[in-house]
Image (tube, rainbow, N blue to C red; front, side, top):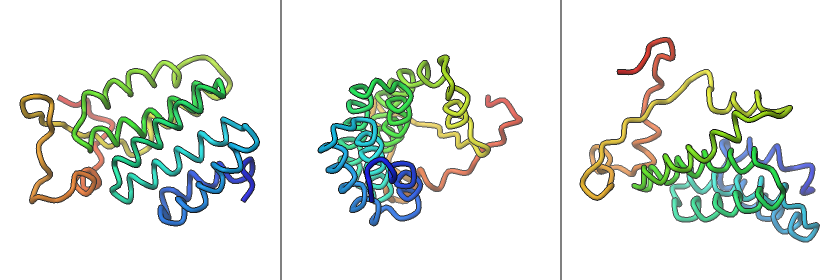
Length: 170
């Protein structure tokens, strides 16, 4: 898979087949790094981060998503950095750091709403047809409550039902 040709497909694959994504994206990272293609390397790192989230490797997800942000910044792509920040926000939240996740979202929103030819497409990523609304119950010192029934935080986050976008939340 060539670095330039495979980056878009690798993001789609991260959701469908996370195990396969890690192997393919690692190859893309090496190729992009050799070519000094920071944008392609950033997308591949984001794909690994997304796959790691699905595989419940939250430490790995955070590491790869932060790398994706740094590489996107080196590529001067505020939009790519913002998209990686949104994924990082999710990983941080289910890792028990919702305030850090909210900070990442706040940092991402200006780039997603800014001017530019793809501004509308990026805003679409923030407003999917099915919006999932999570309520985070915090314990003292910013720790989130454990998942119901002792399950993993990732499984709990996946079980959240989509909300009705036509109603304003309380």
